[in-house]
Length: 546
Image (cartoon, rainbow, N blue to C red; front, side, top):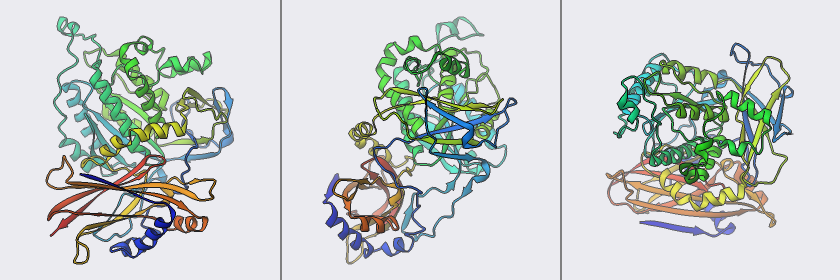
């Protein structure tokens, strides 16, 4: 059963702020309030759109160019020059393991363990492709992880009916290798069999992955993964180990209305030649998923994800040209690189990590404030001769308020997915939480949240107050990990005076939950939801009820 409680604005919030400081277990949180809660560098504000463009610069031989300055770049949006508001150069040497605060046994945190200019994610695709390709890809992934220690944090996810985390971010290649070796992809029927493959023992010209159920699954899970990765700062290099599927995430029919002929020719050249997807874009599958395709594309861009597809089909007897074109398109539009027709997948994965570890970040606020949902092309130029630039080629100008409303309409589904027992942790909203089991004075389990206020969105309104709306959720899992024993949510609508807001920003945003549980061992799935931006943070905490 689920309970929802709404707390009235300012007066009760201040009362809660004072009461929480005196609640059981909060002394542990209070002593860590300055260093224990991960402090972001900047307060999030709603209804703004900062465009972040990561640029990989290489010279003629493919070696990275490391000495460019902000004045060496020019950024154009739909042909109009933009003012660069921030510029950063990233390199592997800036990666470090973040010192973790000493927390009491009853306190958990979802603060990231690494600070890195780029994070690497391997997505093992068990939805698209046949069992032979899955087995070969798994073998190559194990071989890659056996080649030595990693210099950059790496996480491994499996794409199946739901995104499955095989191992969280770490530089321990042995631990990653073990997680892959123990993973058994779900059994799926072969989709590569065709009349052509039956007719010839040497060639298969059949199309791959046109099953609409698998297309929808892939799109939905890519969208879910993008939301997870958005919680981590910086560039994410998504190494998609797959045979892909023939549905373009970046329809060129949209681009043709906003790119000049020369720009489009350059884009086509960078993606390996003219696209073959124009027929697919007007076909039934594309029409069915057009809105979802656009949403996924924008989610990947918004999360700073550069896709590096690695063709798990390698140099086999099957010809899957459409799927390979999809790989080239996805890589080109997100600023990654595709690796196709290669048997050494391990080398491709290594190259992907090296390529995405040295790059420049350019940021700007678009001069065009009309959020009409259309695709806007991005072009980055440099005056330095002989330098090739690779970057994402645009974004969808979705109205931030409209996007937030659409996300709010589906927030219950998103939260339910985030709260599932084996779902990866979300870090977009960062917090600590102290869990106190029942005592003689209080027969309930008490959960005190200490939320990093810098990871919340505050809006300054005409009443002179800083407003935020935050939900705190607790799901309790017992022996049955598929269904929670208890779920509860409380929502705080805070309106803060300037002095209270200033004080809060140097401490933490509090939230308190109490739940009744029968005797037994439980895992609590904890979440904080910023209901202005719909960003989520999650963590797990064990508790025993005597």
